[in-house]
Length: 181
Image (cartoon, rainbow, N blue to C red; front, side, top):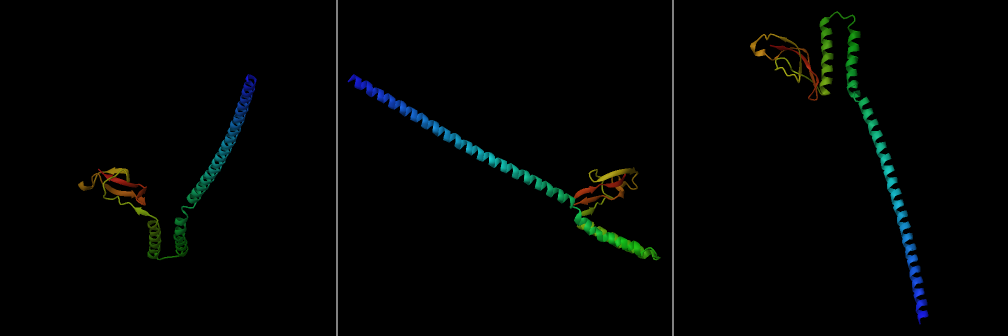
């Protein structure tokens, strides 16, 4: 029986070795499948990333181009509105070459000035009131100091040499003023 046991043991050993080899082969095969799946997954993520990056670059270029176009055409509305004032000036100059009535000339230019002011006001431009106000370095630029003609005008704006303007409540140009001392 010992020969039979030995043969049986050898068969069991061979069966175990075969089983081990099959398990190793199966594990190896499963590992290869996992690696292939992982590589496919990695390729899919890489492809998605490249596409997303390309989309973002296209979006960035498009928005930059739109911004440049907007900046280039931002003044188009204002300029279009001001063309009527230019036309009025051209007509006034042509009609006033041989005009002898100075009062009619003044009236014509006042009408054009009012039209021009109305266009600017409709676009958000506002005149700054400086005369008689307390000097404020955030709004005014002092170009001269003079003795105050009255005690009440000390530290206040006596005269505005150049008007200041707001554009939508933001200072567009500071008023150049003379301040009383």
